[in-house]
Image 1 (cartoon, rainbow, N blue to C red):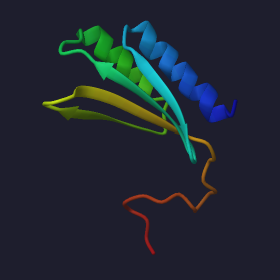
Image 2 (cartoon, rainbow, N blue to C red):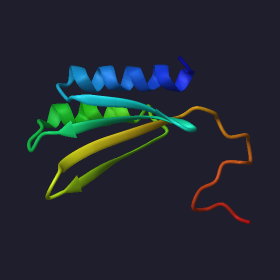
Image 3 (tube, rainbow, N blue to C red):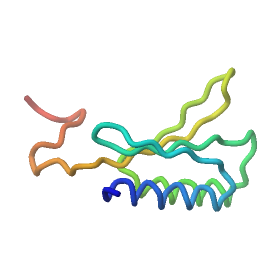
Length: 92
């Protein structure tokens, strides 16, 4: 299993320990973790969830009135070379 898969599996395990059902999926260039969030989550659980996803390369929350709330986190399979990391402030 690539290092990204190991990191994603660790994130998924920690989210599961908080009581969130998770899905892990290998994709081109990254491994993703998704967890469905209940309507209410204690302050302590939110702190734990945020600590967990801080280990990911990117994370966010997708919320809709139809499908509820899904927390997502991704771990890149390859680390960008120095000076090759893009982003909103990248100059061309």
